Image (tube, rainbow, N blue to C red):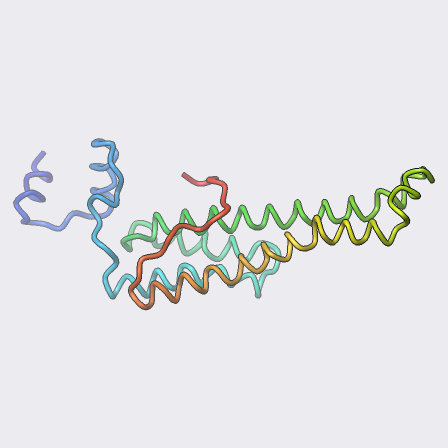
Amino acid sequence: MRTIQRIEAAEVDPRLYTLKTIAQVLDVSMETFIPPPEEKDRGSLVALHLSSLAYFIFPFGGNVIGPLIFWVYKKDKVNHVERQGKDLLNAQISYSLYVVLAFLAFVVLLLTPAFSGNSESMRQLEGVGLSISLAFAFAFIPASTMLVLTIILPIVKAFKIYRGKEIRPYPLKIKFIR
């Protein structure tokens, strides 16, 4: 109780953990208590979004591992890292999952007519050439699009944060981390 009185009297600046606890008790969003990012926090937020470019160092999972390490380390120390880190992680996990699913669909569409052994289905698809076109259209293009989103969106968001602009949440994501 004394802590809340001191916060209300502006005698102390509450820690992020304290604000999180108060927000949970009052059942409100943390954004209610946290002002827009200050100049000193912007650098950390830019680094958070650019950490997904660890993809170029570790192609299989670097886009998730980089932000995860940054998020775990900074989420209670820098304003907005908790929310933006969750958003980034959910997006990167989702995009990676979409790429894997699209790749699997590509392989299945590519191999199914060739290994079905049914000459009727081969004639219906007019040979393997059509199956390659279908596989490309239904799987390879979405996978490529997701790879571009995995790389381009964090760069765009980091640039907006650097310039002091508000950013929107990442699109097409599943909320794995709440």
